[in-house]
Amino acid sequence: MFEKDNIEAITRMMQNRKKNLLWLAVTSLMVFCLYWLSNVVLWVPWSHSPQLGIILMLTVNPVFWGVGIYVCLACESGVGNLMKKALLLALIAVGISLLSDYLFFAVYMKSKDVWHITTFYGYAWLAVLAFGEALLLKKKLMAKLYPVTKRLFFVLGVFLLVLLLSLSYLLVE
Image: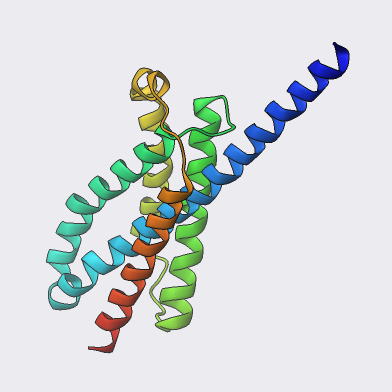
C-alpha cells in the first residue's frame, strides 16, 4: 500500500511537471506570436503615418494581447494558484518583449530610439493585463481550464513562422 501511494504521488508529480513545461512552452510561443503580430500589423501603417500607427497600437494591440493573455490563463498548467500563473505569464510577456525589442529594434534595425517612456508603459501594460484578467475573470478562468496540447503548440509555431516571414517581406520593401 505504501509503495502504491508513492507511485501514484510520483506519477501525479510527473504529470504536473509535464503540464507545466507544456504550458510554459505554449505561453512563450503565444507571447512571441502576439509580439510579432503586433509588429506586422503596425509596421506598414506606422511607416506611412505615425499617427495611424499610434491609433492602431492603442486600439488593436490591446485586443490581441487581451485575448492571448486570456488564452494562456485559461489553459491547464501545473501551477495551482491563478495569481502565480499571472505572475509567470507577466514575467514571460515582459521578458520576451524586452528581449525582442532589443534584438529587433536596437541590434537588427540599429535604432537609437528603442527605449521611450511609452515602451516601458507597454511593458507595464502587459503585467497589468495579466493580473487584471486574473482578478476580474477569476471565476470564469477557474471554472473551465482548457488542455494545452501539442497541436496548439504546433499551430502557434506555424503562425509565428508566417508572421516572421511576413515581417521579413515587409522589411525588404
